[in-house]
Length: 606
Image (tube, rainbow, N blue to C red; front, side, top):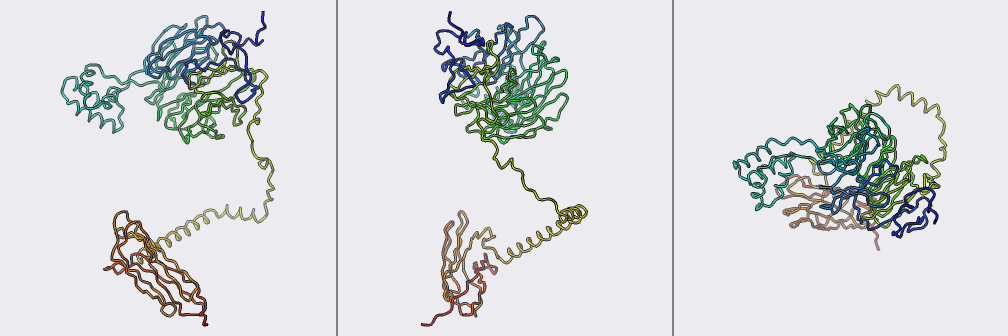
């Protein structure tokens, strides 16, 4: 008989011999990978799902762990719950609506200890026991707005015009009221289909149902692996529900400021627990037993989260701005890593035989990065974008990584026992200068005396600083008001004449070229009846044009006005020249510019 391809008893030995990839491959498209074995790959498996809809569990209590997939199908139909034994499809069940999460949990103490499968889909949780439908839990209905309910009751009795009803529902929606699905559908219809829609649905009782957005489990009273667990689910109505696993009743309800999208639970319901929830508003909240203040340990992110995982007391959050953040359970940021591409999903590696814990980050550039704390320790290169990750026991192999891709592929990799992840293997690390001790000088007696003086006179020094600051602000405001009164601003403050003035001087003397630039900063209003004149010392300068008639200024254009200035003094004396822009009929200039004249060269007589 041929030898087994591995003495580890992994799932590869159980693959169908018809597949061409029944042997281990230890290379990727970029070269050899000494950490992972390519156990199985099927790029056309037609599995379209996400990390939240993947799980691994021993659902038959035979030690052979199965892969459970909630397949999204095409997005509108062909949604199914699939169970794989190794790489063979073992069971398949049709799901009515899009699944948003799948978990396995123990709901009783019967022998053998077989867990149940819970699939969240729409407002329902479908529970499967022994791969057969067992129970369907429906979320409790929400309260309907009184005005909306009254409008549909009037429509039932033909007491309201359907178009007036639609307009009133639209006003309710614009006011921020939460409407039922029926009313929202009515608002989306064109005018010609409104009456038929109302006549079709007005006799059906009005219900307001929310949908499930995320799903997880929590141990009820014992921390054993096969202990009874509660279901924890987040809904579109900004609520968290904890369900009893035996009676399927709501044990606790907690409200959030926003819609939860990712959830992580630890602890026990009867003892103490913590629920970490990342929401659609870009915040992460921590819910505790008996605590009602959800904002106490709130984490505010820079962008919306696309994945969340937790290792011990650290929370890892991947965001849409291509960053991976790590926070403590109290909300303190530990570090941030900038990634080369956008994140598609997150998952944790908890390999207990090696006591190895890390974070798997799937990127949009067809790579999967593995981070141990903030260090990049490995990169797995794929042929497609990874959308689903699940690490755990598959078959009888502990360190198995299951990946699904955007085009529907299924890939299985096994972690080698000889794999070593060095924390600084692929990261540049901090610069060398960071580890060098700075030569900080010792504290002098003068420094100590000054410190003591500041401690003793802290109140007086602060009051003096505040007084001087207030005086400075007062002086600045007085000068500003004075400049406005005298129009000493190069930009007009008159809204009816929005002008901008600039002037400059060219030449070395004794004759200078004086250029004035005017611009109308208005969007549509032209300026007219303007004059430009100059204020100067007649003993020092002589302007050849003492007044310039300004034509109508078109908005947006810059106009240049030039004149020549003769310097009458050859002793190097200078003085400022003021430029006034006047409006006929006004005694106060619109704007004023001050030009500092350069020193004139001496007159050379030839």
